[in-house]
Image (cartoon, rainbow, N blue to C red):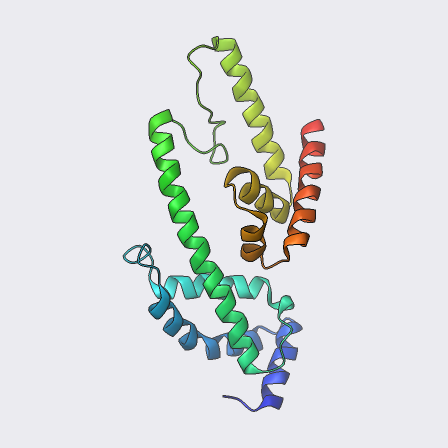
Length: 198
């Protein structure tokens, strides 16, 4: 463990965008995170995800959000990293469960994700070809509008409206307060409406 003054200097440099300082801080936490990931890896993820993969994802997430770290000592940094790792593991479990459910649904419908390329939508056998084409056009407009949104607006809409997470779950996943997530979601809906109107 580094002296408090040296650690504080590294944090200050990292906050200024110094890559070497950031790498040093992250390297100090890697073994600790690997230990937690090895101990706490959900059995539903074993065989599909290596602890090192989850640690790498945690590092990437922390790198994006380092400006949110408000700590002043190494223990606080470890705790911050631990929270991100736990959220990453929980999110991965939810994603896997959602993927399994979606795969079953898609197999039944012969349908693929609307955001993955073509404007995929369930074909209603009782609609005329013209009506089905109209549904496809609407799906394409929605997909295009979503892709024009900011990353954070797109994320909150996907989590809330497509993946059906509660506001509490989204707040946990996005590292924000529940109230902040509700406001973000409301702004995202307005932004989406504006994009669709255009």
